[in-house]
Length: 320
Image (cartoon, rainbow, N blue to C red; front, side, top):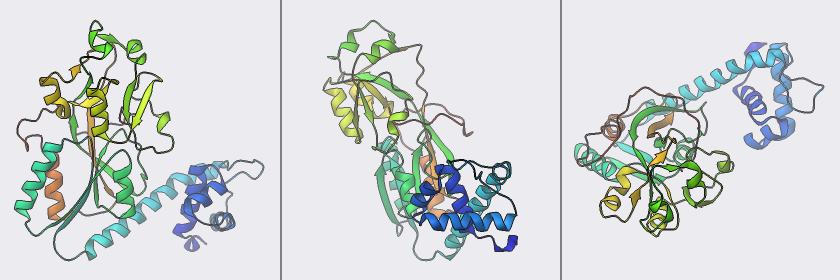
């Protein structure tokens, strides 16, 4: 009977598909493997179809399984929306904002937005976290923060539970210290030449981060999980790297860093998005913060790239 289908059975089905095995699904959902197997058998009984091939070692979908997988994902997604919408409806008390902001986001602009928000909502309780990579969305998923300012290239933590929408773009520049060998290479610098020198890269040490190579020129890499550390290493002449222009504007003006022109190597702007749980209704205070964060004119003296608010699908990458 289709009425007997549970959301946990659908979660087990999707987890087996995503992880490629019943044991992997058990680890992801923190359940016994026997419970996963029982959920799949119950689901197959309710659907009256086999979802997985029985003569293969891997969890290989049948034709019916491939056809039903998108529906299972959609049901889970809508359930998450309903659950979070109910939570938003039940929320009471003083205005509060909990937001995780990626370290690459313009700091002066963030400060200006928070000042404006405090003036408009003087009783609001603001919980701010500065994160990198997937840290912000993990906090949203764990309920620590309601919102996260995330870089669009960073892989999504859980698309079924979290949705993203465009916020703003920031121009990236490639820099090194004047004493670094690349500073004396004739411009523009070819990508192969970059690959001969150490590149300073920000990462959050998540498993699989080494597989994302957008903006990375070679194998000689120093990985740091702190944006300030990257900037200090670059200024010390120990490597080269990409940074948002707003972060190094003063360093470029004072010649502590120099901008490197790249030959036949395009470095697109850094796109920031707002991440939130599906179905979550923003409060007036949260809506005002999102509006301020996306307003390129909210802070004076900022240099930002031009952008279109349309979302664009891009390859996933770490902060190079």
